[in-house]
Length: 163
Image (cartoon, rainbow, N blue to C red):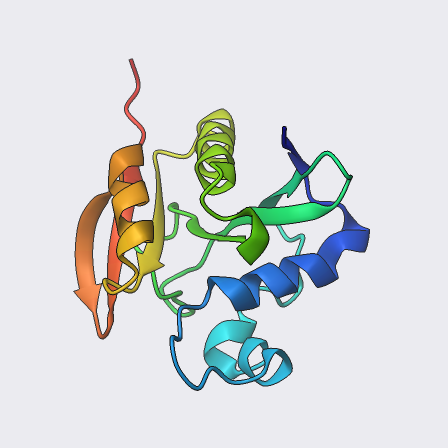
């Protein structure tokens, strides 16, 4: 059993741990401090809590955090890797190694999609390395579609259709 709830201010260290985990670098991955504070990654966590920022955390039965999902808005002058437009938040997700393959990531994704709908967004995006086949498969299964290819990443979009 996993509980999904809003990330609290005291859990920002876990959030940055998950941000680090979400960056798919199979070999020679830089250490956490260097990578998350590099210019192209820092924008994903710097001044967290601004308008448009949302993060959810998964807690196991031992009350330990096992994963997180988040989104943030970017703009034309400060694009993220999965940038689509100023009104499409870019999503990130990670689950600790011990909790992978247990449905935690899918549950987090479903909750953040629901959150985006509740907040009135029309779409959400993400960037994924095509070599990360398990992630690509899950995103497609959840309804994300390929949007663009940029460097070594695919930008995928989930479109929210009003009924």
